[in-house]
Structure formats: C-alpha cells, structure tokens
Image (cartoon, rainbow over all chains, first blue to last red; front, top):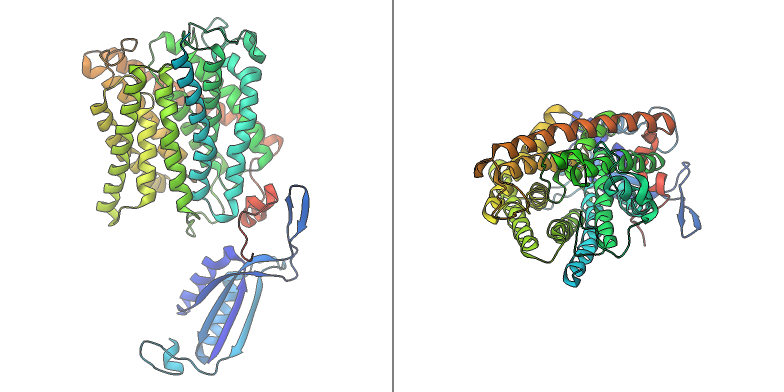
Length: 115
Length: 411
C-alpha cells in the first residue's frame, strides 16, 4: 500500500480527476493549499504597498492505493497535471509507504479497506 | 417646479446607481470563479466613474441635447452641462430641475455598459475594457437614447414606447453582449470543466439589490411622485415576483430542485421585461409579462446557449437581451391609455399599429447595436488586444489585471 500526495495547479484538477478515473482510481481527498516552489509569485499592491507573494495557490490530492495501482496513479497524475512546456509550477508527486488503512463503516483493515 | 417630484427623482437616481454598484457588481461577482471576482467589481466601479464623467462632459448632450436635424444624434450644445441648470426643461420633465433629470439619466448610462460585462467576464484585458466602454457609450448608448428618448429622435417621433429602457438599456446591452461573446470566443476550458459560481450568496445579494434599485429605475422614470410612478412601481413588483417564482418552478419540474440562483435569475428577467412596459400596462398584465419573461429567458439560457455553444459567461444576452425584446413586444400588446394617457393603446386594446412600431424597435436596435459593437471590437482589438493572454486567464484577472487577490487562504 502506498500513500500518494500530489501538489498540482488548481486549474488542472479537472484533467487529473479525469485521467485518474480512466485508470479506475476514484477515491481521493482534495484540499486547497498554498505552496512555494521554484515558480515566481505575483506582485500584489495594496494602497501602494507592494507585496511579492512567494506563496501560490495549489491543490493537494491525497490518494491511498494498493501496489498494483501505484504506477498507473502516478502516470495519470503526471498526464493530467503537466502543462507541457516544461515550465516550473506544475507541482510534485510524493509517494509514501502506507502502514495500514481502516474503513470506519465496517472496521475492515489493510488493502481491502482502500478501494 | 415641484419639490415632491424633485425629491423622488433624486432619490431614484441614487437607487439606480445602487443597481450598478453594488447590485450588479455583486450579482456578477458571485457568478465568476474566485480568481476573477475583483475584476468584476472593478469593472462595475470604474464604469460608474468613467461613464459619469463621459455623461456630464458630452454624453448627456449627445443623447438628450437639441437634435442636429435628422433625429439621429443630439448636438454638443449642452456639453459640459451648458444650459443644464436648475430650471426645468419642459421637453423632458417640467416639474424638476434640468440637472435632476440629467443625473437620473446618468445612472442609466452607467448601468447599461456594465450589463455587458457579463458576456466578456473572466477574459477581457482591463485596458481594452476601458476603451471599449467609453466608445460603446458614445457610439451606441448615446445615439440609441437619442433615437428613442431625445426630443426629435426619429423612433420617438414614430411613437415608440420604452418607459424605462427596455430597448435603450437592455436590448442594446444584451445584443452587444451576444456579439462580444461570439467575437471574443470562449473562456479557456469552457465546457470541458465546470465553472461553478464562487459565491452564490453574493449573487443573491446582488439580485436583491437590483430588485431594490429597480424601483428607482422604473417608478423613477415617471419623473414625478404621482399615479404613474405608483403604477410602474406595482407593475414592476408584480412582474418580478411572478418571474422569480416561475423560474424556480420550471427548475423544480425539469431538474428536480428549485435553486436560489434560478429564482434570482428569474427575478432579474422579470425586472428586465417589465422595464419598457411598467408605465403603460396594468399590474395584472404585468404578472403575465413576468411569467413569460422567465420562460423565454430560461429557454435562452438553459437550452439555446448550450445548443449554439457561445460563451456568454454570465448570460447578459439570455436575460437582458431576450427579456428586453419580450418586454418591448409585450408593451405593444398590453399598453393601454387607461394607465397612461400620454402613452398609447397596444394590440390587445385595439391598436395594432403600436405593435408594429414596437416590432420595428426590436429589429432596428439590435442591428445597430450589433453592427457598432462589431466595429468597436475590431478597432479596440487592433489597438490593444481584447483578450488577456492564456496564462493570465488561467491565473485569473484579479492578480494579472488588478494585482490584488480577493481572498486569503491563511490569515
């Protein structure tokens, strides 16, 4: 079991969801986050005071998958989230080992509780 | 001069300003995505600044100034408010100061281009928006207002009835909106991903403020505190109530739930449709006009727009264009001299001629508005480019055009 965390551009969420659906990964948690990477922030101006914000809006996906789904999931996120021009700002995918998973409604544990 | 009339018209002017800011600003602002809400508020706010100045400097004179001879445009004799002072102008309103009439009309000139924002929302460059707006007010709104409301205007001389601006305000902006939506093209990813309204409470607040302010728009157009103002007020309220309810019921039946966005949209459609008619029709017929307004606008917004595939982002055409056309025709059907002796009888009261005149309005005004909008679009597009770059559209107009963001995530 792996726990996949992806940080992507907010407007790419719909494409990522579609490419994940295509490999039958339908369960995920989505949240709004702020992040700082290599992409430059925007200058904001409030009554003349300039603020160069380093933090940019991103979307975070948390997906728990069984081993057979790990590579398809990574490939699907990559496909949906990449803008294609090799520019910075498209985000990152982190893959973590997952120790256990519990389905609260039934109490099931492990791989069967994930899907 | 009548102090009651003057007080009512000045109060109405404030109410009509409130329709643009904050009414329309929040109605539209809630409908866009969170990254573009400030761009909408800014566009509405700056229109209130820019068009108010255009109006007192020369716009009022072009629209209402002495006719230049052919009934097409007013002269510049009243530019800079020359000859527009405290004395009434009997051609327009005999019982209030000329300046009161002028500033009441200024608020109409402000809201009309603001309505068009709905068509190009979320993708227009701010500089292009500014130039477009001033040109549009000067070459579309001012002439049309002159044709229909100005002394010597050629459509006014034909007997056209437009009590508070069904043609001058709503059809002109609605048709121009459709033209612009087609010329500008769709927003990035339109129809590929859902564009959810980012703040429906804003939209409902805005719709409620529109309803509130519209009493100034319609009942104020009686230009006096009198029976006609009361009739316009009641007709407006009845039509709006009927339209808001009708839209919600249509949704309930077709989609399984009545939505608050539907009720709010229906109410605005009813307000639009009753605008040209409210000073000529009785309140019972106003209810009928409201019900049909909701039906026609629903069909335009939910069925026709999707079928034809143009991206009128916030349905400026579907609500204002379609509602305005229906209201203008309905005026030709339901107008009666028993309500307003200075008006005319409509088709249902034995005067088919009036219906023909109203029909002419919905042919002439759209052709003029669409043609001029096309020319202005081409000019501004060549000058500065109408659309923002794709990467700016993706990031959002708040950050790229205004250098601000509406909401913070942390703190």
